[in-house]
Length: 235
Image (tube, rainbow, N blue to C red; front, top):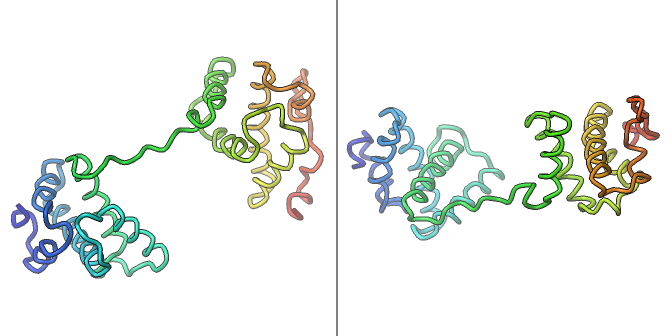
């Protein structure tokens, strides 16, 4: 029961008058079941009251919890509220997200939609990860760093390597690195080179297209035209 976990009668009235009212008792008990300390439960409920006040004032009903949550998040991004003051603020939004997770676990709200992974969107990236682990011994951490660049590459250029050219790839690297500088360009280039090696080794990429981005057989890296500090800074 709410009364067991929340001391303030004023805050209890606010919660029972708002769109969270139907589930607030169960939520308070669920927090305790999940191992939250009594002081943390009290804090969570007081913060939730701020979100409930905002929902009520903004015209969102108990049937519009998810749209109301997203609207509140958007409103706070536009106009951040003073922390720890009454009403919607970051703490209130945090409490609301826990409340929504509780309702999803109880089956009262639909579960969150899991976005497709990079490998789901571009299967070649999943194959690249496996190949690099098997043939190069790269760690998951390094591959995660590479993947951020390669997701951008596939988004910008697609995953058909036959459409890649040295000029297009160089333009991608320069555009992606421009806000960050030459060190970022080098890091992005390493990821692109590794991807092209994989594509070439697995017969997906004509070697002529990948040659400007591949190291020589002697193991010496080729310095690309256009990657000077002057070019990077002038854009």
